[in-house]
Length: 111
Image (tube, rainbow, N blue to C red; front, top):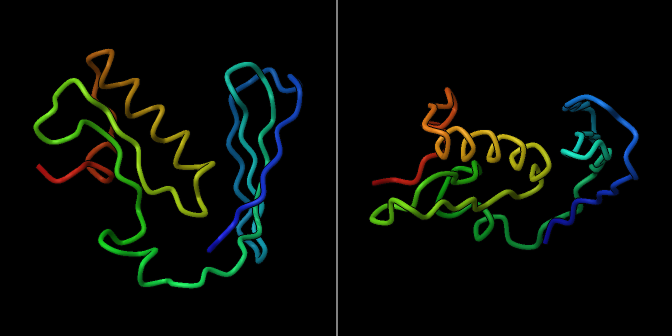
């Protein structure tokens, strides 16, 4: 299995931020709503890549569940959970407020 290591700090950063440094091993940072810094990176090997990657191509599924218009789900983060959780929050918030997020179709469940 892949394990991604992460830490969170006490409130330090007053603005929204998302930083992704893509070397190997990679490092990512994002802020939480209360100003904490969440940081992680360096995935460890996964024992069964076929099982991990099936049935979608590695992107998470974010949005309303087909047949359940009042239920939102966010599934399948893998090693990029810190980044996808931020995207998921923006997509779900937009839907709940009646707006449209430009990235929602990339992560939508099949109808």
